[in-house]
Amino acid sequence: MTPIDPLQTSFWLACDAMIWRHCAPWELDEALVAWGYAIGPCEAQDLVGLDRVLSARAGAGSPVLPRMVAEGRLGKAAGWGFYRYPGGGGAVIDPLIDDLVREEAHFAKADRDDLEGAALVDALHRAVGPVVCAVGARAASLLHLPEARLALI
Image 1 (cartoon, one colour):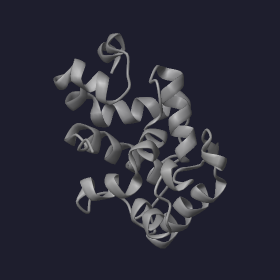
Image 2 (image 1 turned 90 degrees about the vertical axis):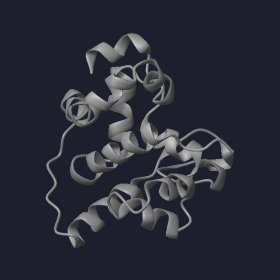
Image 3 (image 1 turned 180 degrees about the horizontal axis):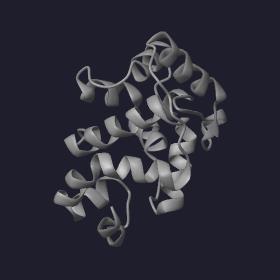
Image 4 (image 1 turned 30 degrees about the horizontal axis):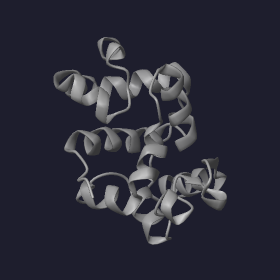
């Protein structure tokens, strides 16, 4: 099994912060795919396995992913993660995840400021831009992003 790269972990933690404060997982994926990513970060994590992603985080991030893993939401191989995968097929939006995120944020008294589309992508890129750009082509490969788009981050 290929280890999770620290760059992926950093990027996915920034995505976790976006979900925690600003959007539903599928909204983040849709915004990033529309911007040029080949796959959204939530679906990518589902493919890797959420238990592996959680382990690589070493305790960092919001309480959302630990709760998902505790509930058995381990990603595509398990049939559900950020998305549901009925019959092992493609990703289907699971509205219960948005409820889970909002419930955890409410209990933590975390403020939410909904963002969407370009504003969401810009906020994420401000958070990860320097690290992603410093790594260059390797970042493009790991984050499923056309290399030509790196200059726009």
